[in-house]
Image 1: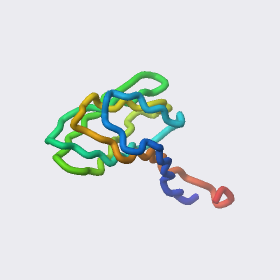
Image 2: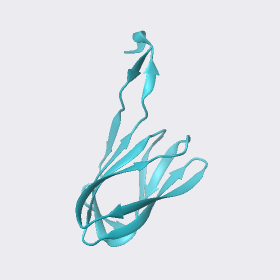
Image 3: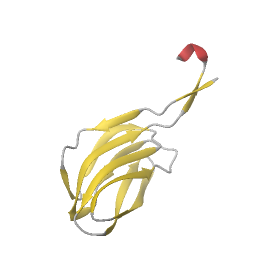
Length: 109
């Protein structure tokens, strides 16, 4: 058995001001949501992760300027979509979903 690296699934968001939008994603099991976010002021906010079996808030603490943040996907459930904060001081520049490591048999590679 051998470990297979994470797979990254970039999402086409362009430059998106945060207005509480719901971002549809390919349903699946993910380990992380990575985002590049620009904040004009210090900001404490939340994004919401929508799963097949419910939803969870995840906190973001952002300094002024552009930050790369990584949000853990805590549930072992299919992630269906993500709600961005409703905050005109924030802009999402990039959003990437990261799948978990998995074990693979030699023949799978």
